[in-house]
Image (tube, rainbow, N blue to C red; front, side, top):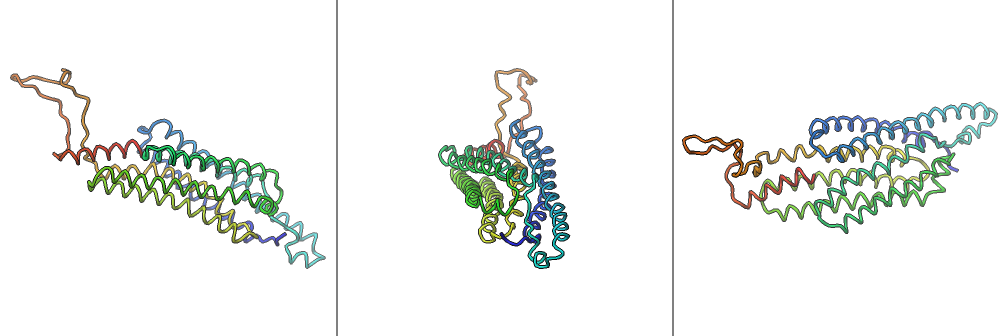
Length: 334
């Protein structure tokens, strides 16, 4: 068994929990902005998803804080008891008094929130992926990876509940943890790459209109940025888990990963505000008026006065169709 070191065994989780609190504050700000901008416009399933993600992240935050309390205060108490018992044996004090990091109930509960939050966030991006691509095979494969990640997370979680020592848990379940992290990386990478590709292809199919091109490029950039954050976090966790097997630096990164997923969802939803500003004067056919309807019409000296309808400046048919498609995509598919 490796020598216990609070700096590398408990410290990363404490720092990770502080980062989680910071990201939860960002999540609340984004949730407020979402409520103001889209609270009355979005369909019920999107609003329900936002409520669900915020609630799950709150549960993750609370259980993570409890876990940190147990690890820090519990470890200090254990160290005091060990020092009192080992006063006559300096060698035992030097090697850590036989201490090892305990696996608290709070930390065990906190570990399950990650796969659950990641799964529901990926549902939104898979929905967007499916709508943009119009395909089933590639989005289906990405969905299978997401389900596999959730299944592995649910399979590993009971093992954390029965664990009494974090080092023993890590060593005994090394293969399962690696499989969980690799599937997570594959799921995030495949969704990001696939969605970016179909966004690019959609932009190519819509023509060379400048406004359309700008919007598509911005969508691709935001998709890559959001996906890159989660992907780089996945890679960092795997790298630290493999390269530093004798400590728990990887748990510090893993502890705030669910908050990154939650923020990525709200970032994607709130980004629609900027997308709509790219082309505020899009031509839209007003279908509320029909020549056969007399309501709203008035006649003066034999002439008919139509109700006022706002149109964009005259433009050719190609550009008009492009902008109609752009508006549909920005409001319906994003």
